[in-house]
Image (cartoon, rainbow over the protein chains, first blue to last red):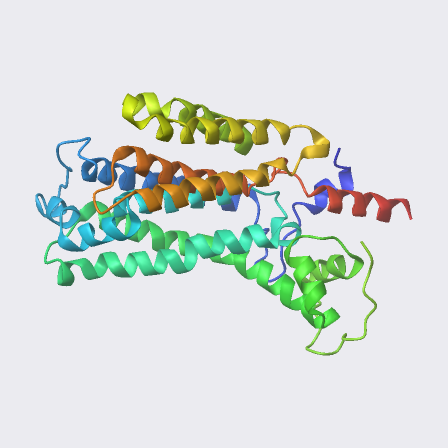
Length: 222
Length: 120
């Protein structure tokens, strides 16, 4: 049972952003966008599995099928042992799953989850978007559904970075206060301690420690 | 809770997938992998609902690793649907398995910490 003070703290805004980056109002749009990208990628995977006869592309027409049947796609199929669109669909589904898991203060209570979410959204999103925008030059054909998913990937990066940034700020604050790799490791995995709570309060209030200033501060027990 | 529910559904899919992908009698040995993995996933996912065993779902990571490795190892250049199914379901299970059971609440450790703090 969660007490009232904890319930209200779960909604506390982060000073840097002026809102709570782990709030549902921030995360649900990410999950919805990722769901749209998942459906598009799954549709293309169905074509690559030959479960649907063709792919509808209102802009480039047949070119989408040329991209999905290209030698590059075949090589990726060989590496992954599954169609590249199916792997992409899984990655977008991962964005949805990791976006839904965790409380509205997970940037503090489960930094590992936020970092994992960030890895799935930010570097993978940027790389996949770059690859998709390069396809016209490499494959010699363009794919409108792929471009839509690439634009969604970049939008996801924009929507997700604040939460990842808050978690990293929290971990940096914790490091400044303890100077201990062990304590940082515990904070990353969400183990509670007095100093972890103080670090989170500092991120909320904006009253953060300057590097090295609080190195000798006592470390709270669990 | 929802992650465990989805795992149970995926376990059911794994258990019946040899029937979906038409395993012949010559492949009796291969028949065993998905149902065994399905039963293991179901047991681990259901065990996680029991509070003292709430971390049991992490065991699903081992099952998913087995599915992915086997799916990848068996599959050649021309992957057949059964191996691709193992690969995809294995990856999907891994993503769900790392989600905590009471994922939308603060971890029990933090809840206890806050209660102790409030009492002081």
